[in-house]
Image 1 (cartoon, rainbow, N blue to C red):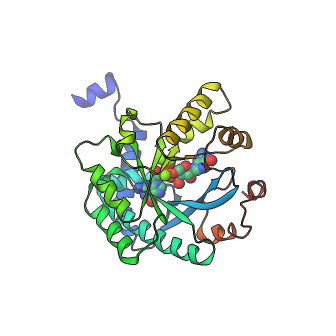
Image 2 (image 1 turned 60 degrees about the horizontal axis):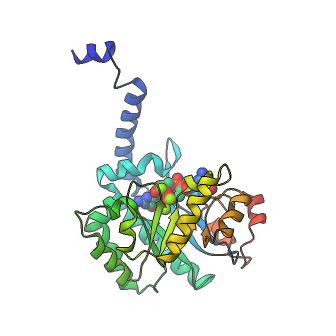
Image 3 (image 1 turned 120 degrees about the horizontal axis):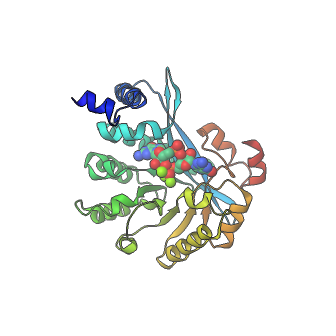
Length: 288
Ligand code: C2E
Ligand code: MG
Ligand code: MG
Ligand code: MG
């Protein structure tokens, strides 16, 4: 009867969906072995000081080099990793790699260098998703501000867990906190001064429409003013054009990240960016 209903009335499970569901099962299976098989890669994307034209920060972004599928982007596997719980193990690996990298780059190129690591609410809610990070940070005595944890709005609205205490313990261990994809959640703003947040990242959807109408420019300006009033620095995501950069700089935005400066790149390529101390973006735009 269900089959009939599906055929005659509405089709809620199309062949395309079937394929993607199968796809997800295969990916979920493959993910389990991916860490041991060294199939994960880390890319780094510069975060640029818009006013000083300098680069002292990067965000680490995971990639999966699948033996059959090639390079798989996180959009295709982060959800699956969250659903299967694998995100904890994967996230801990990313964190440990980022710690090694920031230590090396601080010693070799830039004593104030900082790396941001993404952390999904799933990771944050579980003890195992936090314990390793806190212990490791204290154990190796990383200078304050070496690592930034990027969280999302949905975590802050989560009343069931002790988010505030957890964020404090991260802060005590020397982490800074960044609020990623800001403006895309359906939240009220009242949570913003309940927590200590160092950086607010304006989501790329606002930056994308910056030049196509006045409304998104108004929204960006409002977010920047509000963040500054609350003592946060602002990072704009997804800057692809010179005009977007100029508008954001004029609006008082502190930092920018986007293809205009550089796409996410591997550690070897990233090291080349340290060479001219002042981050020279017109040159970089030509490179990528
Ligand atoms: P996100 O944290 O918001 O990262 C920014 C995303 O925007 C990255 O996508 C980056 O490649 C992309 N991006 C940066 N500049 C531009 C631009 O100018 N134009 C456009 N169109 N895109 C730009 P990516 O690397 O595919 O990552 C997607 C998401 O996957 C991330 O969004 C983050 O939520 C998640 N993710 C990535 N790595 C990790 C990780 O290690 N752990 C966790 N939990 N999540 C991760
Ligand atoms: Mg992020
Ligand atoms: Mg983001
Ligand atoms: Mg995102």
